[in-house]
Amino acid sequence: ILNVEQSPQSLHVQEGDSTNFTCSFPSSNFYALHWYRWETAKSPEALFVMTLNGDEKKKGRISATLNTKEGYSYLYIKGSQPEDSATYLCAPHDDNDMRFGAGTRLTVKP
Amino acid sequence: NAGVTQTPKFQVLKTGQSMTLQCAQDMNHEYMSWYRQDPGMGLRLIHYSVGAGITDQGEVPNGYNVSRSTTEDFPLRLLSAAPSQTSVYFCASSYVGTAAGPNTGELFFGEGSRLTVL
Image (tube, rainbow over all chains, first blue to last red):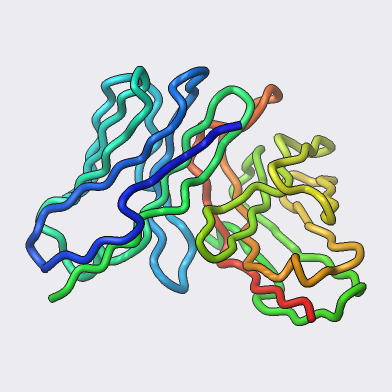
């Protein structure tokens, strides 16, 4: 059973700030890691699916890195905008199980 | 393109009543799943399916039944609703499925169904 931790639970930043959050998971039997963006009153939407140690993925101002040996992934947002306000979920899975973390709730103030 | 469609969006039940949450996808995805989302907790997997005729339990399956008679549809049944099943339910589907376990394809989610059990 996967134990997934995301930190911080919530984050308030000013428009233009860069920020990052962490997803930690057991490193054994790693298969893949998903990042999702979840806006209030909407459905989660996939940002990245990462499978290889050392993977780096980028979509616009958002990027993610993956370290499967030590069991963590970082999500970075460069120059945060109010429209980045959302909850960011990670979901690692091994060969048996996929678990979502509780998420990091980001609020970007104009 | 409709994507993943869930119905109903809202439902209020009394304890002991039964109901079915419907989920349909038009993307020809092999993998479909149901999650529940409760305050302070991540999405928790209830049941999933890697293809028509194949279903399996997730993390919190008790009190729920599923079936997968077609690729498109994956209904979730509550046979005797309990207050502990008050939650927001999400259906999700994905391109990639494996017989051995969960998939690696990105999940496409429905809009959610808010269920209250009194």
